[in-house]
Image 1 (cartoon, rainbow, N blue to C red):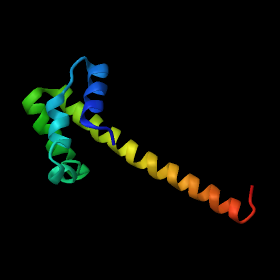
Image 2 (cartoon, rainbow, N blue to C red; image 1 turned 135 degrees about the vertical axis):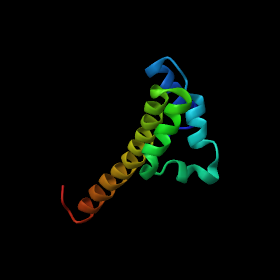
Image 3 (cartoon, one colour; image 1 turned 60 degrees about the vertical axis):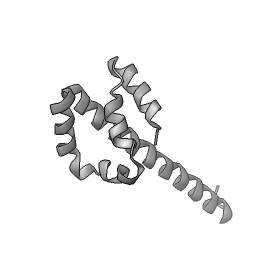
Image 4 (cartoon, rainbow, N blue to C red; image 1 turned 120 degrees about the vertical axis):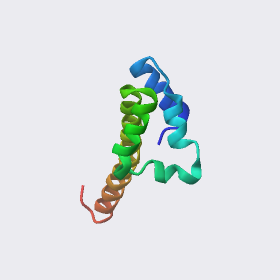
Length: 94
């Protein structure tokens, strides 16, 4: 998952604004990071950001979660594909 600075850079490129507050809220406190990335609370947290900083901030919160999910599952997929290839090679399948 990207560090805060990478999320800020992505937001700036996409919107022209950093939305640093959003990214720091999500990733700033390691003890609460998993709780703040809980996708069952997306509606609640998106509403909170929209109320504080507008609709675009809520969209950047959702995009942050999307980017993290994509990164997390991307690594899993790469690891699975590598393990599958190695297993097939072990058993002589090309």
